[in-house]
Image (cartoon, rainbow, N blue to C red; front, side, top):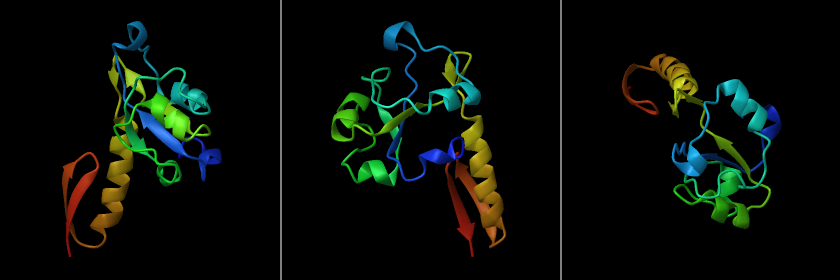
Length: 124
């Protein structure tokens, strides 16, 4: 949604990068993903697992680890986005950058210890 604010309020799901689906997935930068972010339905991601689901998609009973094809049947208006890739691997740079911004805000409230890309402990 940061890449495309028009998605606010829409059901959105992020599909797992799958290098073995349809002969491999080409490298996609954040710019490429931005261009594909408006793909509706799961035609390109039918067998991919979902790794993140918006609250709007959850309201339609879409869940993490569900296949994109099943999610599309439950929420036909759902937008599916692929994680950016680089050199045939998932590129988590944008996720790391977002996590660093959140950690910076939390650090204003106390001592923070990063545990993973999306998890931290805050001593108050």
